[in-house]
View 1 (tube, rainbow, N blue to C red):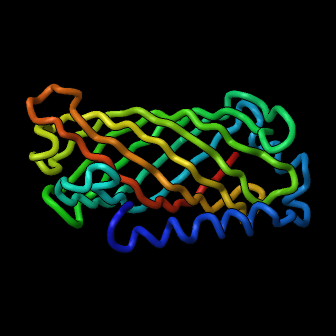
View 2 (view 1 turned 135 degrees about the horizontal axis):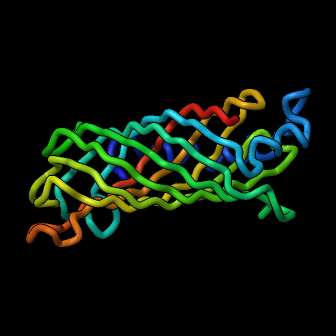
Length: 207
């Protein structure tokens, strides 16, 4: 588990999701056709977000602490219509992300790179939230702890679970829990790697 203040996220997330998922959308902004339309093929999403990732986690408990901020700008494209029924009803989206971060606990200063994502959005017509799952692969330049990664150039692997909480029919608060692995794929002799997890909060515009 992440150390420090990151632990609150894992306590709050289930409660937030449970309360929002059962809330009925009201008014013109939340009609079935209007809500589903923003997740149809050919629509776009722009998200600005920021958060913090904490390591080590799990079996990595004996590694040095490396906690860092993560700020991202994402541009997403819906490439399928909303399909299916029941709780699996939803669509597929691909997203490009540029990201940067700074270390606030541990050795190192900066990280800057890009990631490509594939996401599945769970879209229910009468909910104010749209949960999603995503996986991403990318690369970055970083001077993070050289005892963990011995190269400036590294790769990243990501898994995310989150939800968009709609404020209007186009604007949404994005709440996400992200796991990120950073390593240089054995380009360097030093490649223990970094495994971090933490909360990301953002604002999305869908159009």
